[in-house]
Amino acid sequence: MVYEDVEILLVEDNPHDVELTLRALKKHHLANKVHVVKDGEEALNFIFASGPFAGESLNSLKVILLDLKLPKVSGLEVLQKIKEDQKTRAIPVVCLTSSSEEQDVEACYKLGANSFVVKPVEFDAFAKTVADLGFYWLLVNKPV
Image 1 (cartoon, rainbow, N blue to C red):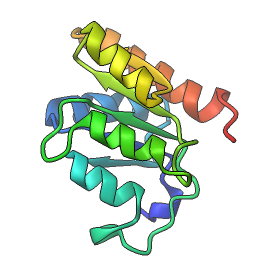
Image 2: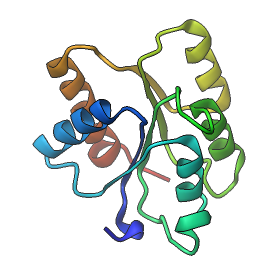
Image 3: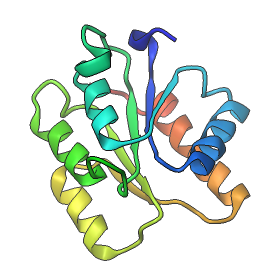
């Protein structure tokens, strides 16, 4: 995949959740431009075109699906860095996490998250939620 064609960045360390998310997006023909990273450090490298992604262009990135509980750099730290940088703050970030704790919800919105979605445990509900997110952010939402 050419990085400049990526529309969805999935930041998720759980291989099972990655598989379910990709399957749901694929079922609704939304998965052909998804890039997956497995920790916060890799996410920041990808978003800011540094490290192994140096020199890449991400002009078509439409949404970041961000887990909060990540190795190396937490999802909240990733969100903060995205939203405090002039070049990336307009990229929509959806916190897609298993946490439903009020403090996580508040922290995400305080840092500038565009949406906070709790991952449903049941597969069909999870698949529908992911498909709805993909449909909204790729096809319905009008980006800046």
